[in-house]
Length: 527
Ligand SMILES: [Fe+2]
Ligand SMILES: [Fe+2]
View 1 (spheres, helix red, strand yellow):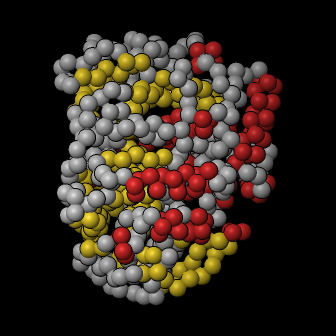
View 2 (cartoon, rainbow, N blue to C red):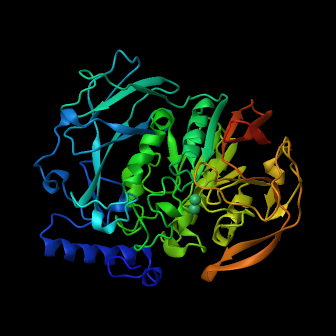
View 3 (tube, rainbow, N blue to C red):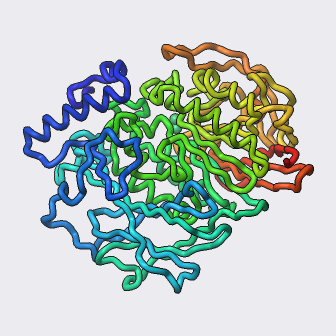
């Protein structure tokens, strides 16, 4: 099927930037013919601006764009989809984001140290995504006819100057909807402490919207995590996942997504990675304009970014940049991301307060899962750097299963690490975990499952690596230690030690019912 006069085959021959440019020209022609206000796939930003990732999109003020007739007034528009993320300094900065179903004036956050003592209005910026309904593939059985444009209003407030290790309460509103006058939803968050201490964080990827996703999302809350890592394939609004302008796309799926996760994401900072289902060529030349309108990246301007919490440094990468399997984003940073990764790893390893380095991204460095197996681009560009800086833990998604490797150096097993084992990454190398069972439909393995309580060691396993030209090269795998076909999340406990003693990072895998299926302890001498 063709869409907008282009076939998927033609789209596959274009880079992400070329697709966006073609789409921008095609839609502006159509908009002119119709006398419309704006072309599809437009990112419109408020006063503070969107990140540079959407800079190629035409910028207009939301006020000049939107029709005013018949629009609900502020008093009937209720904020929803609250989600928070760290600023650049998690001890002092937090970003609060939410959504409104219609345009609102003067969106704001009130924040305080007690739910009964919230402060003055703090300004929020609006980021609008405008998508012509005719350019979407709605999941509704009957397509939207009127209005002809899907407008999504995301509000973002950057909170600065917070105190470390402090719990704050907040509520959000806009002109006509002041939480002081309405029965308001009040949420809380806690900033990172300035001193070393134990904490837990969680992670998963490939969530989507489903009752299984509801289950895993709410299992996060039961772990009381300091933050949550999302390894990509977030909502599946981009249903095809090829990063092509001809892919199926229903932006309103994101509305359901934010509603699904709000109870957790309003309180726990969510730090997302871009998966192949986040490449949205409609909004920007790099395909990231949609994600940048919906999320914040720890105060940084790219879908690759880092932050530290206590004794753990966390790096999030955008693996669309190196994927051979799904190449529409391949090379889009021109090597900048990999150069940045090397600098970040070197900087984190030098810090005396950082024991462990955790890296998350979407496509798997090492997996035997039948669907996508391993990504050769990740092995070409990144795993040599993980070896060089002895990265402790890598978290991936993309394959909708749970899998953990033995610790690896240069792709070789250094020691067997069954569930319950202790690994010393400084000498034994990196542990790679796939945690892609957050809620989207599950995939399968070519070998039997093997996990805590149901160990069934199989080795070697016949698998493959995705290579240039979208070829698959067979490989015989001996590193697949734990496999589980089911919904899951990771809960990771950090227990820092005094200098010269052993800090521990305990990686627990939890199934969709809350039972533990795998555990490995990473141990490192504190500097
Ligand atoms: Fe996925
Ligand atoms: Fe994926």
